[in-house]
Image 1 (tube, rainbow, N blue to C red):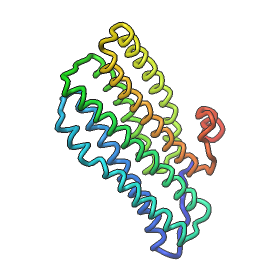
Image 2: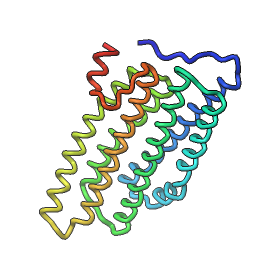
Image 3: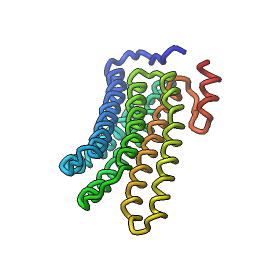
Image 4: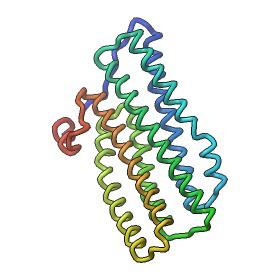
Length: 237
């Protein structure tokens, strides 16, 4: 399937506005991706300073969300976009929300890990959480790259990989629950690790959502409640 081509407008200013909101969305996504990468690095280097740095910039993504949302609203009011232009703005506005929530989940992980490190808690499950996190990071990065290229076929492939993340999360969380049952005195730290794993699983879901918005943007069909394999078969095979 060919990639979407947006209408060319007589107003170069309008063209610039549309390109700017996509560019700003990618910048916001890159910020969220970098924050996730920082959190995952702490699972190895145990750097509380890295977590402090991340948390000190916790409002950055929130402000980007507000600014970009206002810009999209302004374009709708001024330009009254139609067809592919309107789909672009809708996809951007939906993606804004998912990226902001990715930032929230990353901050939640940072706060949890900071408490665990201050208590000098060590566990082999840090490595398992990192493994899950790397899978999620790969999907998030891939979804943003697909967004940059407006590549629906790549978005399909990434969305399909979310099933692997879900399975890995279920397995890891099952192990953590067994540890809590086996040693009730350690419920609190293992529950904290479970919450980190849950945040990663949710970030994976948000990355999948972005992929679904890309597909909507390209083919003009809302696939949020449609089996992703069915979408691939119907539109891309």
